[in-house]
Image (cartoon, rainbow, N blue to C red):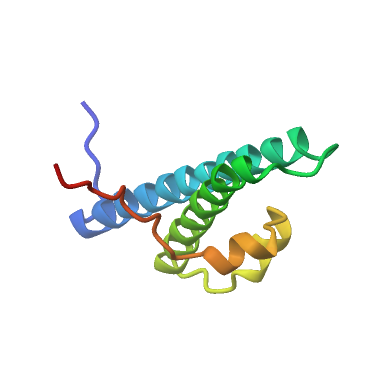
Length: 113
């Protein structure tokens, strides 16, 4: 039976770094998925002028992408990666998504009965 001879603090640090990397990967994937949904929506409505009835659905996709961007940026910054310009270029994040970064989608309105 082999025994790990590293000090416990080194083992803990290794585990923390692994989890940070995993979380960063999950947040990056979530951003990619949110941007893909927005791009698919835009591609489906590219040939014609977007009807007014589709605008709320698009706005929701933009807000979701903005939230995913925010989560990714926060995770990167928590890992010590401070420059977000690289993300914006690499993921080709639209300006309107960048402007929504950090805005949480509003909860559904309750109606009184």
